[in-house]
Length: 81
Image (cartoon, rainbow, N blue to C red; front, side):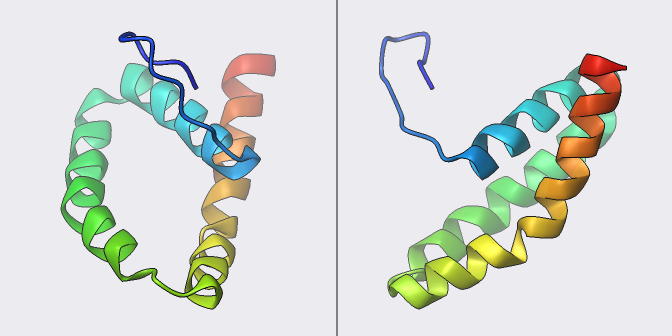
């Protein structure tokens, strides 16, 4: 992912899918996006700091799979539909 300031951040497929769905949600349902983003911003960094072992990171990746599948369906509906 390339940022406006020129910084480049590598992303895996799951992260790209979730980010794309987030951008769609931000445009389609701004209030819901604000609520979900606020919750993520409050909880996400705290949980990410605790992912110090590779098995914990793998568990987090697998726990996000259902959200990835939902995000992929949303992207297909809005982008391909």
